[in-house]
Structures are given as structure tokens and as C-alpha cells.
Image 1: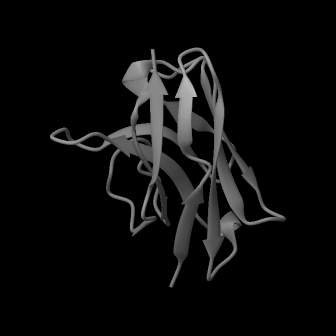
Image 2: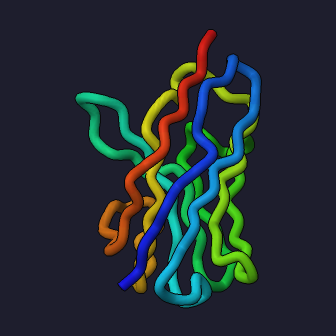
Length: 121
């Protein structure tokens, strides 16, 4: 069983940065494909960034060049560095893990509870 706990959300002005972190427990993170998703009320969950075991990444077009997904195997965490934030980035952000590569599809097996990011203009 894998547990995921997100942290690092908060409120920031447009143009600012935030770094989200997802602590993985239960198993080594190196055995999982990892991803970040976001969701706003009334909308479907959207894949933001994903990381394959071989280091290949995938990003939503809306965040390319601004967000970076990375993993720290020593800490068993996966981070999402978010730069040049925009009001439209406001959402609940979720960490996800799975044993199959789903890229930005939402068929990951394990999910965290989410952390809120609010970007004001």
C-alpha cells in the first residue's frame, strides 16, 4: 500500500512561484510512475506533469516552460516547481502514483488528498 501526502500549497500573486512536494510512504518511489494533477470546482481533473521511471517527463501545454516535475529518491518525494504562476493555475493540486505509465491520463492507482494553490491577479 502506498500513501501520498502533498504539501506546499498556498496563496501567491501572479508571476510568483510555489513548490509543491508529495511525500510517498509505503514503498520506494523509484518503483512508480509519478504525476501531478489539478482540479477546480465543476471541472474535470487535469494532468499537469508526469515523470517516467527513466526520467522522461510530460507536461500539459498550459504549463510547459513554467512547471518542473522532479523526484528525490533519497527523500521519497516528488516535487512540482511552479514558476510564473497565473490566476488560471488556481486549483487543488493532487499527487498520483502508479505502476504503469499513464502520462497525463488519470488512471493512476494511488492519489493524495490534495493541496490548494491560489494565484491572485
